[in-house]
Length: 309
Image: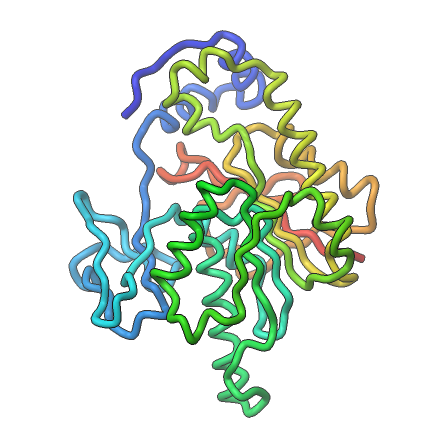
């Protein structure tokens, strides 16, 4: 639990947005978030905490992280499980990546969502093989992009420590500026995950020096950068392809308003997926979904599912 530093500008901004809900939401942001241990599908062993930890409802092979949990490797040297926010898993699943798709994860570090995407593509290739429509190999590609060298090193480690070498041949790690993909690689990708840099208010309030300096200008500047990345994703996407835009911000300026700007300027269709209705922690926004910690103990997370038309 973090100590609570006061910032009147921050307080008044979010109190205006969330009204009566703000005190409970603010309190929840100061609490340690619930995390899950998600089984690594590329590990052939049963995860060691199966049967000992509480399963997380609605997410396959996910267990509520026990206090003091440590990562465990299997006999082949791969980690059995990956610790992450449940909402982050749903964001990656919403891309619905297929084995033939060319997929771009624009801001991929630390790597949990890229791991979910790689698993999606590999699982789909296995299904296609069972149906006799594939030889079981992934014929598409996954680019896990991260401009920060330090964060990219973490991303590389995740891919190496969770996916067998012979299986990860369809994955490439890049260090490009996400906002330039649309210019340099137009209409190349079937699926794009744009999990963009954001205010991250949960982390912000845990950093007293940074929190004291917060002004609304921070959110506005980030929204400009976020739209630049989202617009780049639209240009890099094939017609009929899908973008999942996401943030860990609670600010509508970084969430719905960024997506609505794209809706106004470009040919897009905001989508709702029927299978997402099973998650009672998802709240509908004008053009997306949000997860707020006062309701479920994890998040915050926002995402929108966008089809290029």
